[in-house]
Image (cartoon, rainbow, N blue to C red):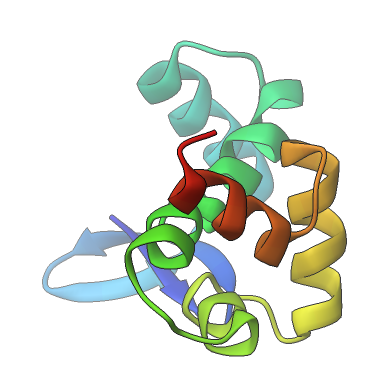
Length: 103
């Protein structure tokens, strides 16, 4: 079972109805088995998961970048903006404007 807590992905497993943290080696094994990717791809996978609600929130709502960043698990809107620009090659508000214009 995975859960997002304070912007951090945590893996928990159930044992007699008690959830306990899983160590790194167990996390690697579960990730590789479930995702079909090596552990080195995990960082990209987790980063992708954090951005999952980002672009639709930008284009379909008028929420502030700060609120969207927080919903994606980022503590800092500035960090979200840097990561977003790295991925989309433009800042979040420019992305919003372009998508709404149709391009």
